[in-house]
Image (cartoon, rainbow, N blue to C red; front, side, top):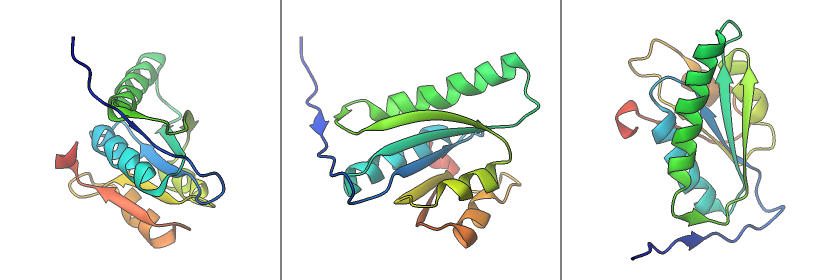
Amino acid sequence: MSTVPSRTVPYQPGLSGDVVAGLLNDGHAEGVARAAVGEAVRRGARLRFVQVVDEGLSAQERADADQATFRAAVRALRGVRGIPCRFEVVTGDPTPTLLELTRGAAALIVGDDQDTGQQIARRCIAHAECPVVTVPFHAA
């Protein structure tokens, strides 16, 4: 049996805010989660996976979204140990929700708006209180 060595990340409290991964069920979750893990490792920061869901979802739609986004987050964490992280689900409009989370954050990671018809990333870049990293769809 072979094992894959994992990296342990030294967390240094107080030196950096959280890296916030804005996870939407829009096809970007995998790439956003991977980019957020990389950013947290680089900064030695905590990681906050935040799934933003619409209010009007049925129970099945909500379960499907939960499964897709958090499965992507767990896959992104494989092989990396020692990153303090938490998972949250927030109901509401993604843009103001994510902008609120940028207060005190080290970075916000979101999917790129290109070809989605949304302007979440563009609005976050314009109004966020921390650096914003956008992840193109093909990186997922």
